[in-house]
Length: 164
Image 1 (cartoon, rainbow, N blue to C red):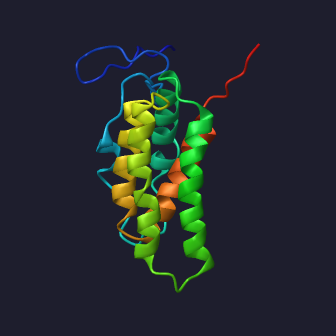
Image 2 (cartoon, one colour; image 1 turned 135 degrees about the vertical axis):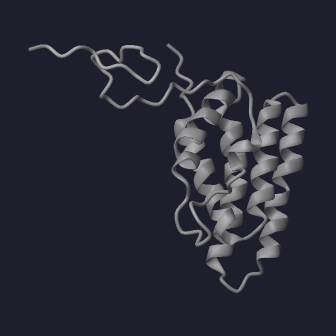
């Protein structure tokens, strides 16, 4: 015996796929940038041991594709990442090193990003991305590490420029 289609609370038929979980909507890439994704910080809780999944996956993918759609090059993306990575590596190599010394090295990312925008090699959204993440990363070594991981994920999701 066939059962009638299920109805939701509004009386609409749910259809044959009603019991299946809905997949996440496809990310939109041309909608600009909002620092709201950083409102909760990088971590799932105050212990700062686990970076929020969306920072590494969904947000990174959205940002990478938005930057790509605005004609940013992977060369520029890597240039800024290398500055960040060198600062983080220096901190890791010398545990006695004062975090404030590294903060000075990552602070340079902000004016450099502004200059890249002025030279038209990066979109303004990249400056916002750098500014917002540097401000959060300045709060401590854990946040600096999370920014590095987040930036790595953006690079991983950045589409390749293939010429065929």
